Amino acid sequence: MATRMKLKLKTVFVLYFMVSLMGLIYALMQLGQRCDCTEHNMPKDRTISRLRGELHRFQEQLRKSEATKQPQKQPAKPTIFVITPTYARLVQKAELTRLSQTFLNVPQLHWIVVEDSPHKTPLVTDLLVKSGLTHTHLHMPTAKDRKLQEGDPSWLKPRGVEQRNEGLRWLREDRRAQPGGDNQQGVVYFADDDNTYSLQIFEEMRSTERVSVWPVGLVGGMKYERPVVEGGKVVRFHTGWRPSRPFPMDMAGFAVSLKLILANQEACFDGDAPMGFLESSLLQGLVTMDELEPKADNCSKVLVWHTRTEKPKMKREEALQAQGLGSDRAVE
Picture (cartoon, rainbow, N blue to C red):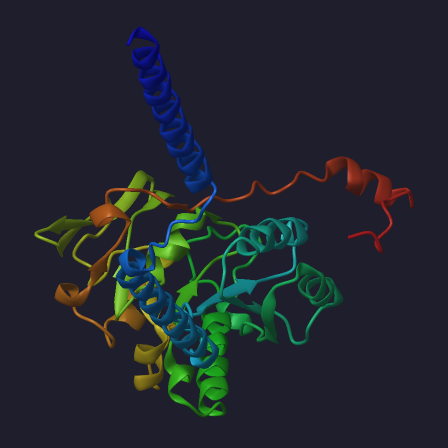
């Protein structure tokens, strides 16, 4: 009886072991098999495929758009036409050199240099060619009866009248010869060769619609002269001499739109104007005080100075010349 029981238990144990072993082997075999998850992954695969197709179509459209797209042109800055009268003297080359190197830092500038001379001189011609600036070289002599004589005060007669008017004449003829709407875009400024200019003043004047104005330093026996602005309008002028003048301003204190100059063919400087009225002789026919455009932070900043170079003393040079030992005249 006992022997039978032992055989039965042994048989049950073996069967249990065999079943367990087979179960373990089956499980191990399943670990190496790929799971058939196709049914679960199909919706996800279709979504990824659709998104990839849309991305590809978008990239194609973007490439075509960039291929046909024209680069946008930035609007060109209006050209500033600077008219500078000049005359022969010992400091002329120094003055023009300093001024030209200021202008080199101003984009879209055309320098119109007008010599007070019956012909163009080699000194000015050579300087302009080497300056690297867009320029026009003109000449117009001052009539003898309008010239200052040795010892005359600088205020006795207006200087540079014929030269500035010659610059205006050239501008009108040049613009008339160039067809197109852009030929009237620009600003006209009268810059003497001995003044000092901040680069900022040129960007201030570039947006001139009719006539723009600003302060000028070291002029009229004052620290500065300036238009007085209230509510964005010029209402009067801060000046120490004859404030009742129509436009009591220095030549360096205003700019005029080229369009306005071209629309008023007769506008020019009057050489017979009373002392201090030269600027007014031009502006009276172009603009009213109410139309003036204040610049330089409502005319509160000085960006140009009416400086003057001291006349060199040449006593030693004259003494050497008297001995035939003077400096070489060919050296400018």
